[in-house]
Length: 257
Image (tube, rainbow, N blue to C red):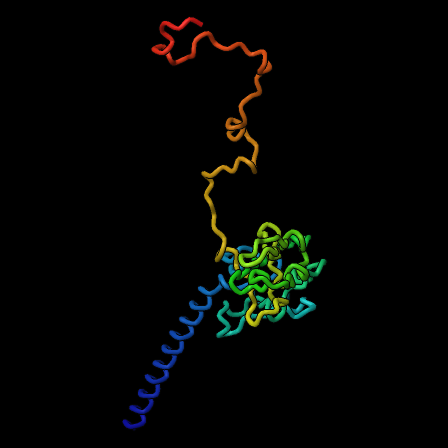
């Protein structure tokens, strides 16, 4: 009887130790994946990450509604908060459905139903690796520009001088105010590892600060105070020169004008 009692207590203690260890590992995994949420690309209309995480109930309705299987639900070990929707542009980008079918099924508002125009979605921001982009290396590519659904706004092609030749390079430039983060450019990039990638804007965008005033982008009383000098009302050829040069009293002494 005593031996059975000792065996029971030993197994109970072992079970409790395993449960505690498993709970610690699981808790560490959850915290690690939650901290990696900044890397996740969410569906169109997703709220800011903290609000999205608070309202998303991980139901998977948005993923079921996606006609291209773009959206996936994060599993353990995927470096994303478990059960939340995300997509990987290099594998399957967002194809910019005009009716945005993934938004209406969301039951909690984690995906804002106010999004009516897919061109106003901001899922991420495309960033170009100029050191490995074929166009920036001097080759003709421009694939990202051609596949961009907001071509001419989100991505433009500009001429750039070539250092070793008189011929110009045609290089792509991303404009953040129009980029939807769909990832079509990343998926189409012909390099072995995509030279243009969609990331969370917070990882790459700065903020100049509200104390800077860009006068050429705004018109208010402050910027107008620093405008061009007023045009003289009297023509220059009719202007009367002063009899004495102002501020030069010493030099003006004894000089008859």
